[in-house]
Amino acid sequence: MFNKTRRKLVVLNAAVFLLILVVLSTLLYLHMRYRLFHESDEVLKQAEKRIQSVHNLAEWLQSDSPDPQQDEKTTYLFWDAQGRLIGQAPKQSLSSSIANQFRTPNDEPAIRTVIVGHRSYRVLQFPTQNRNWGPIASVGIVRSQEDLDGTLRSLLRDIIAGIIVGLIISIFAGLFLAERALVPIRRSWEKQQRFVADASHELRTPTAVIQAQTELLLRHPAHSIEEESPKIAVILKESKRLGKLLDDLLTLARSDSNQLEIHPSKIALDALLSEITDQFRVLALTREIEITTDVQKPLLLWGDEGRIRQLLVILLDNALKYTPPSGRIEVTGRNQSHSVYIRIADTGCGIAEEDLPHVFERFYRGDKARSRSLGGSGLGLSIARWIVDAHGGVIRIHSKVNVGTEVELLFQRKQRELEENCGSWDRPLLKN
Image (tube, rainbow, N blue to C red; front, side, top):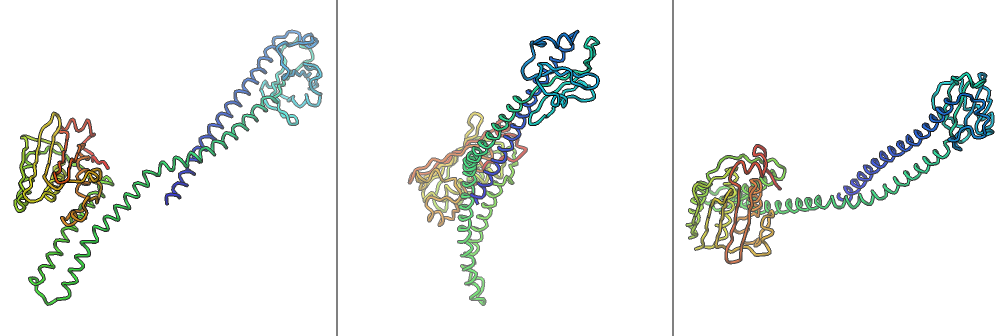
């Protein structure tokens, strides 16, 4: 798949680069052609003015060098009223048969291109308006374009060579750029593949348990619900676990596709922290774990209350899950300048130093066996980081094995500051 995509990118880059080269080269060629023809035509017009200023053209033609400014590329031809060639300057420059090919019956003063043999000429013919010119009825000024055509041919060869070289360079550059462009795509693909594999693995366990317990129930259809209550309890437990896992997967999938929105409002964070800690304190008492709170009042925050609640539940649930009996959990909330600071610390088993950089990765668990036995899926901290990022906040985790874990949250408090730093809250704020 990646090889096919790389080839497409190389062809596309080369085609675009080739198109740009062709367009620019065509414009350059046309510009140079226009400039060269314009300079040649200016020479013809200046020669016409000099001839028009001559009062006695017959005497002018008798001179050895009638026009000192005439160059070797320019020839003057003179015809009578019957179209016969009666003179040219320099003398004997062109044969009569060739010279007559430059004359037109109508003496309109227009510059045109005449091709004789394999050579091209620019010709300016005009009628005489001076009665002192005798039998001369029209004058033709002929300028050879041999040097100009040679210059244009050389330019065209150089342009074609440049396009070929540019195309070769663009192919190699396209290979390099395509490889660089595929790096994040390949990483995303590998991440997605790993995510699908991990999700399938996590879903397989509760599904297999539910299936096995259901088959056991069907073996004894005559049993009462009371007799099969242990199996039903297992099915219920695994169903709840499966439902929670599916909810977490749906949340992450929607966050990746920018379908989840943040609905901000003013949050009384001190009351929210007290409410959630009270709920967890009931669970902590059964394990003899102490939960203490030190929350400043009032503690206000501008954000999505539902998502902030979900964030705090995830962090407190982790703290409670990995804190042994007789342990302690501390919840702190403070106003800091223009920010809100939240700290949740526990005296649990801690996280190994090599695992800390990966704790926010999906399905990552340092001690996989222990996490699974405690009902963890490895998605909680991934969702927590998304919620923090969506609110423009910062989350940091410090931990030592057998000492404890400390999670720090920092949020901007005021709505105006949030809008200045994170954009308008009227639209979803999502970060991957």
